[in-house]
Amino acid sequence: MGAGYGGLSAALRLERRLRRDPNSEIVLVDQNDYHQLIPRIHEVAAGSIAPEAATVPLERLLGGKAVRFLKAGVKDFRLEQQRVLADGGEIPYDFLVIALGSETDFFGIPGLREHSLTLKSIEDALVLKEHVERMFALSQSEDRDEHRKRLLTFIVGGGGFTGTELAGEMADWLVELRATYNVDPQSVRLLVLEASPQLLTGFDPDLVEIARRILERRGVELRLGTPVVHADADGVQLKTGERIKAGTVIWTGGVTTNSLVASSGLATGVRGRVVVNPYLESGSFVGVYVVGDSALVLNPKTGRPMAPSAQLAVQQGISAARNICADIRGRTRATYRPKVVGEVVSVGRREGLAVVGPLKFDGRLARILKEMTTLRYLYMLGGLDLLLDQWALTSASVRRIRHGLP
Image 1 (cartoon, rainbow, N blue to C red):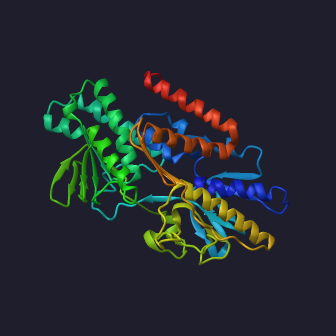
Image 2 (cartoon, rainbow, N blue to C red):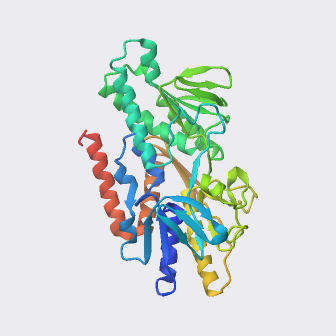
Image 3 (cartoon, rainbow, N blue to C red):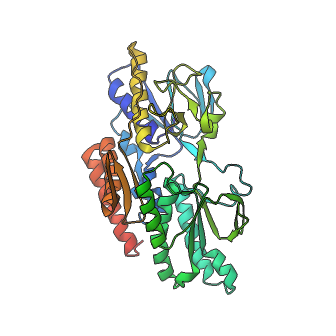
């Protein structure tokens, strides 16, 4: 269930191992007929790349493979009957991989769900892009200074990986929008509001400081240690009592388990994530594996929950597929051991931060490394042909956007 990083990896690995088994059928279910490159969606939101550069058609990835794709939304899990209720009816299964990702966590902050935008999908990115452009367009006909300033104030709630990347990308984009709409730079504000005392909690401290300097150099106002306690149509209120009027609030402050998974009857732990055994199988139902954002996987060194990420979701999808094959063939399953190869963060279109093993990078090199991680993933999915096609598509979309072409 789900054609994200974990679900797609599981389906492809199962197909590779079971393609000659006449008794096996692999069904991949997703509400979209494309795979989203989530590490690129902030670039779509800020107009840096076209949406097609952040998606790959599933038909392209599954063509010629023994995987049946069903475009449908999941409605409910009936795990005791080994059924999944989806658009169009029930889907029976012998083994189930749940990879539905996560949802935005609004932490019960009054008004925040109703008065903020999110960034969890390509659709979210396009809504955000259109909204920001509309704010600039509306400001052109607004004579009241206070109202114009509100329209041109943009708040990113949350200074984690998503919030930092989005703020960096938006900072570059807002420069272009100011020029396009002939807006006084002093009239435009971009703020990052973070409840923790620092950006990028858990990331390398030296690189966190560099991220702070990059953002501030680009004119981003950082409010650290300042939780949002209320939101409405006019902006947000902070715990300090300060009220910031804004026409745009983008909430990236946290995620929680997919609501369908949370209500499925599976045993859950921290942040509603599903408790799994060392093989990524649910402790509640035999044959039900959970991977990606919804799986509660502990760091073997610290015993603390691992932060969800694309690279871990891919590893988990592959591991779950191997263990399902072991179940089918009566063999011993393998313990999943998470391995973080490195972490890369973009901060704008030309700069980034990276930790790869003992090495740390920043600036242009780190930004290139981030792009290389996406290209490496594309190669893993579809070989050199897919990598080159997607690289050409991305390059063409960047040139088109830079020159203002449709």
